[in-house]
Image (tube, rainbow, N blue to C red; front, side, top):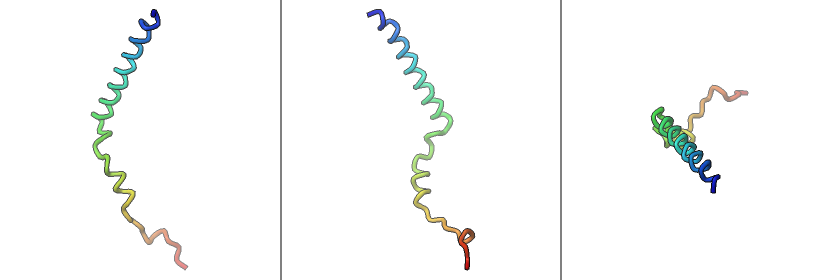
Length: 54
């Protein structure tokens, strides 16, 4: 029972820390363009510059 007195504050601090990191990343713009990378991978942007011509 005594271990709960240690584990509960530690778990609350870890949860608060995780929440602070989430809000920091949200404020920093981490989640602004979620579909951009998924759509960029589908675009065909082949250039003729890199092809070896024989």
